[in-house]
Each structure stands twice: as structure tokens, then as C-alpha cells.
Amino acid sequence: MTAFIRSHQRDRDLSAARLAAAHTVSVRAVYAALAAHGEQLAEWVMRGRLDGARSDLARMPAGAGSVSRTAHASGFKDARHFARRFRDAYDVSPTEWQQTNAARGDHEPRAAKG
Image 1 (cartoon, rainbow, N blue to C red):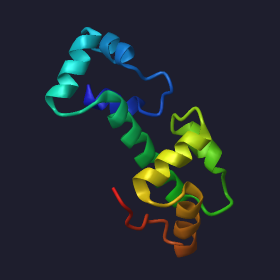
Image 2 (image 1 turned 90 degrees about the vertical axis):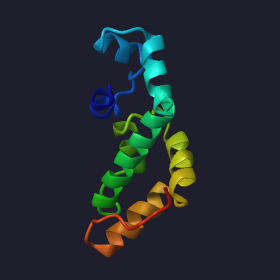
Image 3 (image 1 turned 135 degrees about the vertical axis):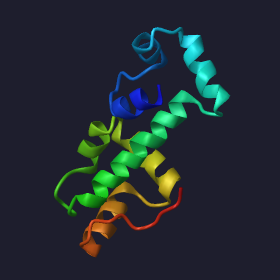
Image 4 (image 1 turned 45 degrees about the vertical axis):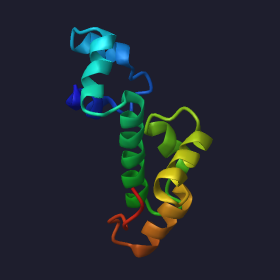
């Protein structure tokens, strides 16, 4: 299941029902399996989406692409929600993250919270 989640975490329609169908188990079994490892599906997917967006923004030169497009490509329906969750996770806005890493020029993300 974890590999499926990782490979589909940017899909906006990723859900417990889709995960259950892909593995021919019940939705309840999906939640139970994740709970056994101390995970919640929504938060795990959120962390993966944020981490992927953070990497994408770090590789993108400032001004080369919009944060909104990155948010949508990462599976977020709303760019404001993405920006809020990004700041909560990394203590910096997505735009600031992109600009800081573009200014460094090496496109290796600098250390951040979380």
C-alpha cells in the first residue's frame, strides 16, 4: 500500500476507497493497516505532497513557474491551502522557499523545519 500511495500521492482523487480497491481490501482494512503503523492516510498524503512540492520549488528558478501551478501539480485543489500548509510545515512561504533556493543556484534544497 505504501508504494501505491507514494506513486499516486499527487493524484487529487487518491482516497482510502481507491487504495482499498487497488489492493482488494476494505476501506476499513486500509485505515487499520495505517493505524497499526501510527499513520493517518490524509496526513501521510499531505506530507508527501508537501515534500514533493518543496523539492519541485527548490529546483525551479525564481520566476520560472508559479507556486499555484506547483500546488495544483502536487495534488492540491487550492493554492491558498497549499501555501498555508507549506508555511506550517517549513516555516517559510512557498515563494520564499523558491526564491531562497534559486538564489543559491545549486538547486539543492536548504535545510528547513520538518
